[in-house]
Image: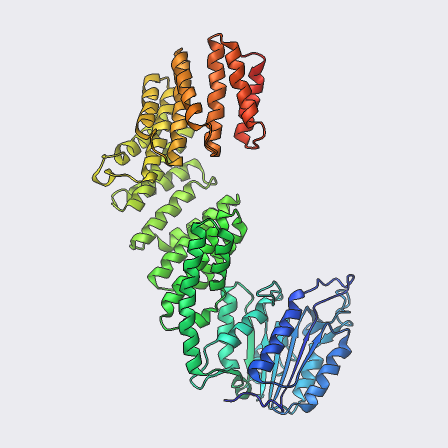
Length: 624
């Protein structure tokens, strides 16, 4: 194997980036970058001296003006590359567009590939390479390709016409190539250059065209891009466009291993500081390292794991910024690249990505898609005994139940499955999902009017997950404390709806007594809610002074807290305080409470607060 002879080789690179406003074609800014980057590679890495670049040819003549001298002069390698819009011409031909092409006249305003094919076929060059980065590029393999004949026969014949190699951005079944920017280039050319620059060479250091194609195909598959196609004879397939010293490669790979780990750790640090945009950039730097390069590193399993982690964490950081569409793309990118990997660590990361994808889809209101994402995860991993995967399956089931698309009976079935399958597992993560399922089960039963069953579900949370209820609950985590507090508040509200005032007030007091001093935001929210409901219950019993005390405690303890949920509870407390004062005949004090709601929250756009303001305004004129 050898590199092309520098003097005896010719390369012609043509690309159309800019089209007329009335052409019907969108301009492709990535094409200009394709030409610059590929020409630079051929000159610097392959060592070619004669590289002709034509940007925005103004007609078919520009193709022949550039190609004909190269066809006549090439003795070793003749390489033709085209990037731009490709169009179907007739039944089998491919039209390569120029800046004066028109969508409505493809046959008369494009350069036909068949003419280029005939010219290249006539060249005396030892090796001929055609690379087409355009839509409909797969037509190069139809009737009349460099080999001639129908599709399957063409490929067979091409293999025996020594010295030809055709590489296209799409196969014969795909019409459209991906022109979106990847490092400034189109997807196909970006991936091709990545492979040529970083792909693992053979023992002699050469990277042949035969080596390039499987790496390129894998790279494009990982990006969810159209599948490329290639075909070539022995001489062409054995052509090398780059040679790297193995010792230098080993050094580069070892350094890359260290760089990947450092980038992921830096992304984690930035994310921990809330600097999510910077964290995303660090994770993206990891993700841009080609898959085939990572596979060539000693200890590549660790490299793949860190790269997979980077994509999941990138999705999480995007979600933290509210960029859920981009987060979904990151998760899907990770899943497509690693879903077939049997390694335990990567299986866990893929499962995590599927759950997070479902969460992001739910945040976008795409609930049916979210349910499908959870279901794919559940069906693939539900029988896996690995503790981490059991936890993720339970999480997916709970999230699926909460996705707002299932019928109530289906929701109850999902929650019951979590409770049945995981209640006896002592792992805290699984017990958290069981407790969550019980709380959600109680909520669904409540909506269905099945109050007693709902109370039973909530009581189970309270009895099994309260402090000291079981050996595992001697020091319950925040997640369990929050769930128990939620359950207590819900039990209180259900007892109130059933007319059981004493039981309701007792439940609210239990929340206040157990969690009032806990600084966790989630528990402050539950305590504030319990105080408001307690005041409402006391007022309903005619115990207005005690109700006022409860409302005032909410106002005193939480008025300065910026959390939206707590701002809403304070506004509610003020409105109810005004109602209680009005019932006692203290009209001026009632108006003062209502006016404070208006003054403090009038500029807040939150829907819940708008409702409280409307209530305060309605009561201002008649506080009794």
